[in-house]
Length: 430
Image (cartoon, rainbow, N blue to C red; front, top):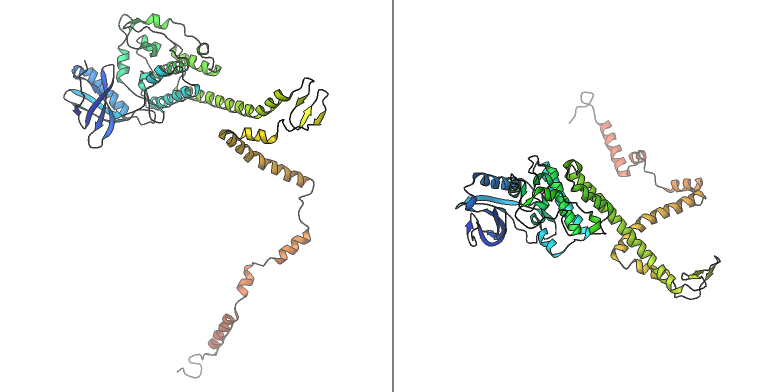
């Protein structure tokens, strides 16, 4: 039973607001005394402090999370125990959880759902490399920062509670619609593929508005009723889901772990390929619409009943002959260009295309001119004349060319040395 801890100080942190409860622990908003930093504090009440196994699991959760440092994983600041309350302190996320988002909006936009799923998978790639398995991924445990990046929270404790949620009679407790089949069966060998199943369930719910398995809101549900349900194809619930994305979702939530993605890296790589394919298709569709909009508008308004199609300056008749059109009300290059440049994205795309095509076009023109001899080499005489006009820069002239003053000084010094008397050969020196 949780207690009212508002106003209580645990270590360096003062509790000011309760944020929620999960499993056996409560989460509060607090202030770090001295720094005035907002933090989130997860507290294990004294009622469970006498349970050594529960305390051990709670400490294991905080220690395992503290070892992780990733943009998509909650950051742990501190941990401790005071007055029978075991607690650990983590960063405070002001934005809503994915559970809150799904309560307001179902299904999510395709791009947003893909972004959230990729954020979760990035966190799992890091965790699995550290040999840490979450085992309790669900919308309530996915938070968001102010930049709308998905943050994975609640490591360890809820996972252990999920393992003990299966009774000896095969009854599941809690929220089994997010649990993998091996967790529902109470199997001991729950590995990283269980996390990938839960990611698939979350993505399925974001894109379709419901979980693959429908479980009544009651305390006990038999495992056979959960595992025996037929999972509908996601495209039947949302026609906007592409075929390859629907296949990815169905593969991720296969009952047998061997039929799913084996690693988070594989699932993330497939999801990125699908996203790139969708972006390329969307860009191509938008460009084609922008290019064809002026033509189609003029064609629909100026087409005559005699089979003549007007396209602005030229009109094409049914006989295939082209004749100049006297009216200027048709399609013009200026109107087409203004329509294309109406969007900033289209302008950016056009500039990129010009940056590629213009150099290629100029190179082609130069190649044609060169092929026809219009860009031949200059005459040999002109080359010789040009070289003759250039000043020589050889080193030998520089060494031989000296100023008259320096040359005269050198000559005088040589003459003086030659005129000096040699000691012992005649006159004695002064």
